[in-house]
Image (cartoon, rainbow, N blue to C red; front, top):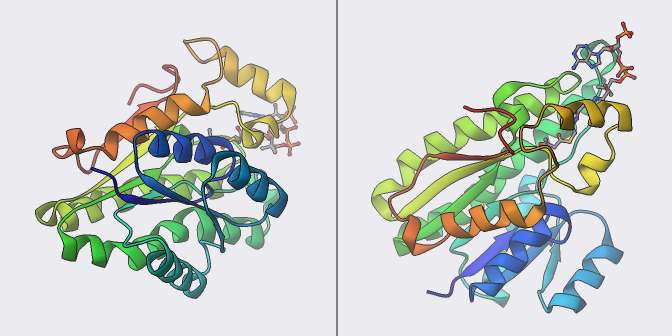
Length: 240
Ligand code: CAA
């Protein structure tokens, strides 16, 4: 059944692939983005998907943004919390801002989006929330105490909210991507990335569409009995 879906960070990388996959499956997709106007406009024109700008780490802005989407497009039944940033650095060099920005956007964004959209899903007795976690939230990663903590938090958030949504037909699941060929991973210094890829059993980076297919499944009616789960898509890097 066609639904209205919001994909946060939905104009680039994994988010772009998710927006396209949900549109292909007949949903009315809205892509949220936080900063890059040029990329967002190009994405919107190319794929005929409306884009809405707000910072998911900003509680009031998120509530207002989701209200605007509901008024202009329709009640939101699918949320994909994909927006995320990295501010990598070893702890002794990491600033409080680098810690706080990552927690505020990556983990706080999931709370803010759920506050905006979960009550309506609960009332309408159908909903899908898919949170994009990370292999680094499961296994940890040198130089990422902020990101690993936020992503690990996403996995806990998912399991808790799944329990609250279950009897209302609202499923809440997570995907834990491994290293995917996106701008975010391209920013990892080459020698470091080479070492990481050498430890991925499948022997390559993942592709954004390989994550998007998992998201599309979790958003479908076929996944009605799947809730509180984490689907790891990481080429065998971490078998959890
Ligand atoms: N384990 C143990 N020691 C390590 C290590 C590791 N994994 N990586 C580096 N070190 C050591 C180095 O060997 C070096 O030791 P020596 O000084 O004794 O030689 C020391 O730590 C300093 O290393 P760097 O030169 O790398 O330190 P830096 O301060 O210049 O950089 C860093 C640190 C920014 C964290 C850099 O190592 C880095 O970018 N690492 C990659 C982090 C990463 O994987 N990010 C993922 C981003 S993508 C993503 O997050 C998406 C997703 O969900 C998967």
